[in-house]
Length: 492
Image 1 (cartoon, helix red, strand yellow):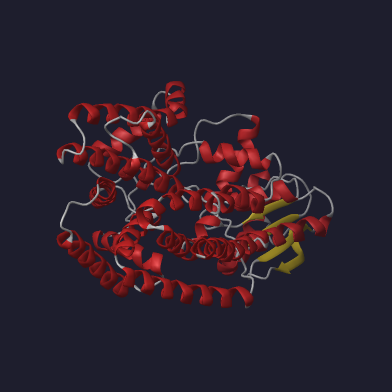
Image 2 (tube, one colour):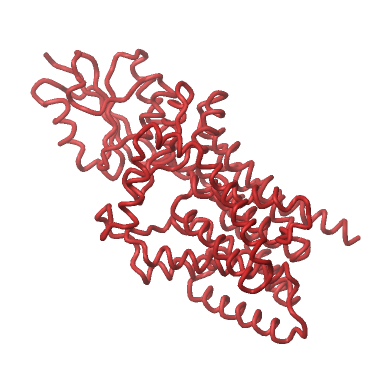
């Protein structure tokens, strides 16, 4: 009977968030902005010529993300150029297959029921990772896997698979950096701190510590093979950028990111986002959880099992490393740097919950309320004016209004870059967008797309591209999100 109940619980825990997220992806109700659109363009280019780098990192000029998400995206684009398929195969599917598989491995530590609760909590409150295309979003899957491997590996190497597990942990840890550079660096530092803590607390010998260090580092370096190949071919420009950032006296960007107080807030609020509660309430919950942990350790008459000690050590090491890195970084720290830190909160919550039955009951009741609330949102769903759907509509309006490829199209953007429309016109209309007035050399229609927030600047940009003396407006369309499309044609 108990096995049947767990089985039903597993099916329900999978289906509910899956339905929520899949509908959003299928309907195209997902953001399509600067970063993901740039990745799509790079992936298209990668099909014809293999790239060794991803798009530029936001923190250090001259440094790039790894190419792995671009390579995977290219494989999907060979099948279809629809961003929905990319979102489903590279984001939704892994979060509903690989992630639950890994977290279920923690059931040996937390118990099956608590593990299911953790999966539901994560899937309900961090569902954006499974449906929004952005290279940092797969990183939590790798982070979870690395923590599991390094918590359960036998550092005495009596198990013949210990080296394989350490090597795999290094490879997956390296992937975190390639996908999510900002937190990835702090995460890797946390892994080395963890190994140092183990040898200091005599959980492993100095010899085994050295062996672990070497194997883990080899795994990490394997993922940086594209980086090294690129550096050799291009005069080590990324290496110079990193050195300048580390040893320079000031930020390379000149832009102010989060303040020290905001960084601390973002760390502490990750538990609140995981639970779906306010910051104040999340602080109270974390104080209670820490208090319960201290009570449990003190009241236990013998030492915690080694695997539990290792889990707490690695969570603490990663947290400490991230705090130090972010608080001392000379370059700006942004909110997205904290993508993946919720895994620390998730596993800490799981550990404490597994030790206190009443905490399990409270968490269960809260998750039921979250499910009811999200199910109500599901059945009363009103599609949003997402950037993907509305921009697709704008492209099709232009394409269907002229029936030929003889036109110019400009998409106004205050930030200059228009990667979103660049990609969508290539995909849906087989048309390259224009970016400079000097490109207008023929007497053919000129289409200009203005997003809602820039409509007030429409006339100035319109007359700049197509002077009022020689052009007239021959068409105007409104998109559901407030964007405006105008068609201008020469009068003489």
